Length: 180
Image 1 (tube, rainbow, N blue to C red):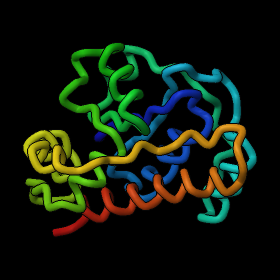
Image 2: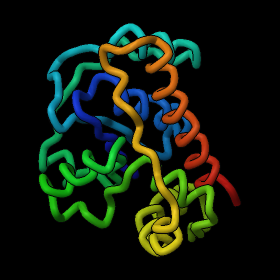
Image 3: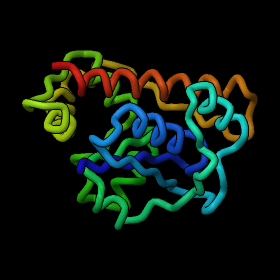
Image 4: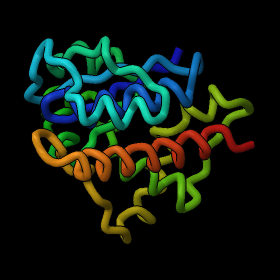
């Protein structure tokens, strides 16, 4: 099964939201997990992000923050970072993961700008994401891609904005994978 790892700083807001949304959208096509570059190990998702998830009928109550490790990177087929800094830190932790580590914005932009996925079925198309995005980098270089801002300890509106960016990107990516 295809394994996706989402990455942010504390692993309590952005990456768990991306993890849960991707898992919901992809179902049994993938196993999705998350980790943080400076994780608040064992900490739950804050209430404002739980509120955002609950609006989509997603329960994030069981989540506990965990630290990004080389082992997690090794067992992942795709690493999805919330910012360019998270991408850099992930690649520094596991240089071997370079060709399968992208920002959420890069993936959504590749989907939205016509990167071509190869494969007969959805699972094959999902597995082709790293190759397709790498081949599409020349197009992505023309865009100013936004990082997902950190909402931690900010207003509910800030959580909503971050969640909306994640939710929109996940919809773009999963629509791209499922297109035939």
